[in-house]
Image (cartoon, rainbow, N blue to C red; front, side):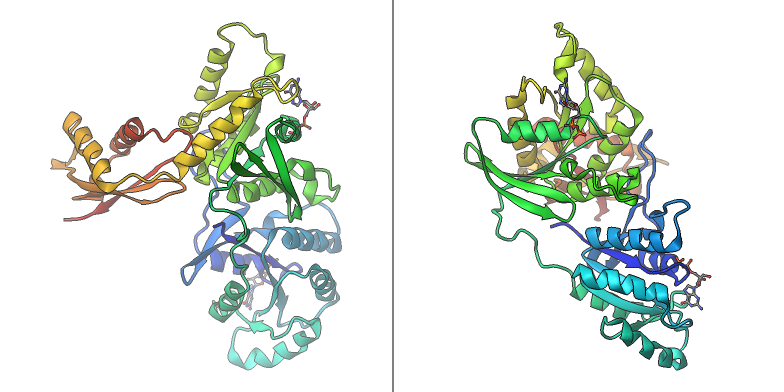
Amino acid sequence: MRNSVVAIVGRPNVGKSTIFNRLVGERISIVEDIPGVTRDRIYSSAEWLNVSFRLIDTGGIEIGDEPILVQIREQASVAIREADVIIFLVNGREGVTAADEEVAKILYKSNKPVVLAVNKIDNPEMKEQMYEFYSLGFGDPYPISGTHGLGLGDLLDAVVELFPEHENEDEKEDTIHFSLIGRPNVGKSSLVNALLNEQRVIVSNVAGTTRDAIDTSFNRDGQDYVIIDTAGMRKRGKIYETTEKYSILRALRAIERSDVVLPLIDADTGIIEQDKKIAGYAHEAGRAVVIVVNKWDTIDQHDKAIKEFEEKIRAHFPFLDYAPIVFLSAKTKRRLHTLLPEIDIASENHSKRIETNVLNDVIMDALAVSPPPTKHGKRLKVLYATQVSVKPPTFVVFVNDPELMHFSYERFLENKIREAFGFEGTPIKIFARKRN
Ligand code: GDP
Ligand code: GDP
């Protein structure tokens, strides 16, 4: 299930950044340290009582020299589109201002759940100052103090309470959700259209517009799919929504809801920096990945064409070494039929479970072939391993001392697991835990 998303909205100086930092605790970047992938902070993860959610960094919604009112409107509209719950923040020391009323009007029309928080209530005596905020029409205001960290627990209780129940409950478990991501003009819309017009594909439902993507359900040879299409939503014309940051935000939302993510590469223009960044998001999210090289019709079709292009991709995307690559043309439909089978395999591997005894046979064989390393004269002992979850497959290896588990040995174990069980198309995660 995807994490719910929370946004903090309010005019400048009410304390949004202060609260954001409080809630996030430590700032977590959305992309891990992959060489060549730029760090970007759009979402941050937060947790409250074992519920993890994502917080949109509204501070990232800056649009240059626009007047404050325009900025506030933009920020509110992004929050409305992206968030499941909105924290409407006001300043208890200044009372209700015209800008607060403006924000209230926009949020009121949105029908999104809103929790009103009155900030800068640094001590209990100041609670008197909250009452005028009832006039904003969002029910009981929550008194908080960002600087002193007061009232945040009650606020978060209220926020978590409003999180939506499981989305898509009516959909079958084995439906494969996938999305196409890539920079503008790589051919995302063309590929969606080509897929949906394939002969054996039966489109059952185009589910209007869910927030920021068009979901289309279809069936092919008995398998149900939902394609999450963000490309069709591109030209809204609003200021912030045409920025690169916003398109990344939208791609991230699509990735979150996907089982399989398809980063598209344009064979005609080749791989550029932005492609790496986008593919990095798919990897980071732990989704299954199938790399698609589109516009294959523009490439001179000599015998080594595929091999040469594949080498380029492997060199540029070393972190996606598990992902199969499909070469196709959305335009001529050449090799289009090879795509869905790869999606099926990647999805199956993404949720594959390995029995503990079978897994341990493989691990013990690996240990025999290549004994664990030593560090400062101490040798790593691997006791046993078990798979703890799927999507992506996640393994815990119990060892005498996790400090002794070197990255390269972890990589070695991963390779052995892959050799034995063929996790093509999915990342796998391995954690070392102490057990005496
Ligand atoms: P933003 O523009 O809405 O992101 O607001 P900031 O988080 O940058 O805060 C604006 C100012 O309010 C800063 O000087 C903060 O130190 C101050 N501030 C934030 N929260 C509190 C609070 O709970 N109490 C007091 N007294 N000041 C606060
Ligand atoms: P998007 O921005 O990623 O959705 O890309 P579009 O689907 O709008 O395609 C961008 C351009 O690339 C359009 O002019 C398409 O006709 C063209 N295009 C898409 N797929 C192919 C392909 O397989 N081969 C060729 N030659 N052109 C393509």
